[in-house]
Structure formats: structure tokens, C-alpha cells
Image 1 (tube, rainbow, N blue to C red):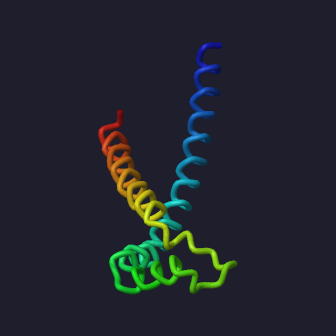
Image 2: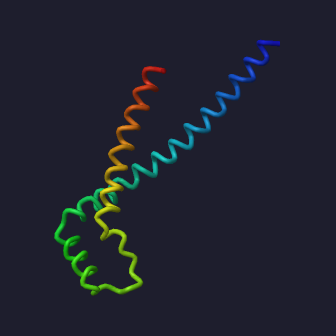
Length: 101
């Protein structure tokens, strides 16, 4: 009986792990596909265009209904920080996976 219980448990772990890996691969595909757009956003924040756009926003020269979260320094700072922390986390998890522990 213990063997059957163990095999069923291991089968459950196998299926769960396969599902997680499939979901992760899909998410990593999306992340990789977005890298060039993310780079454009990063470049925008250090460009004269961003400063000009932010000035126009602050001077109320843009349409009132225009979504302008991209002109918030906090939004970019938080996103870039999250990117950094996510990259570190992915490296740490990859290291654990390779060390099998």
C-alpha cells in the first residue's frame, strides 16, 4: 500500500511540475517578446522627449482624458526596480534548479 500511495503522490508532483513549467515557459516567452518594447520605454525615460512631454503635462497642454502614467517618475522607477528584482529572483531560482535544491 505504501508503494501505491508513494507512486500516486509522485505522479501528482510530476503533473503539477509539468503544468508549472509550461505556464512559466509561456510567461518567459511573453517577457522575452516584450524586451525590445521595454528597452524603448527605458530609453524614453532618459530622453529629451520624456522631459518635453512631462513639461507639457505639467503645463496642462495635453488632453485631459489622455492617460499619462508614463509621465510619472514613480511609475517608471517602480517598474525598473521590479524588473531588476525579478531578474535577480530568476537567477536565484535558476541557481536552485541547477543545484537541485
